[in-house]
Length: 113
Figure 1 (cartoon, rainbow, N blue to C red):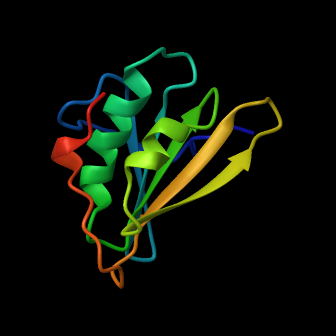
Figure 2 (figure 1 turned 90 degrees about the horizontal axis):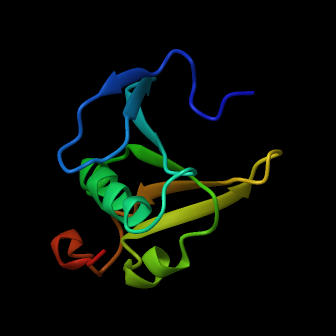
């Protein structure tokens, strides 16, 4: 089973070093990217680029990576939530969403790679 839906459309994302894809369903967009074959700093660079797409929206961002991006989680405030899922092939799928009810505001410009 592919981790990025086949009907997702490839899009350009400013600052990204891997391909991003967008899938719209029921008025909500989900953005996908795969950094499972990348080394540092690419996973962090692409996550920050993708998080800029969803911050303050009801959209989702799905990151496919070779391991849990713990360093990234430590830099996020509670205005960006994440859900981890291990895949059958040993990769990690992280789904990010924006938490509008949060009192914090993660400054994505200040996250260093």
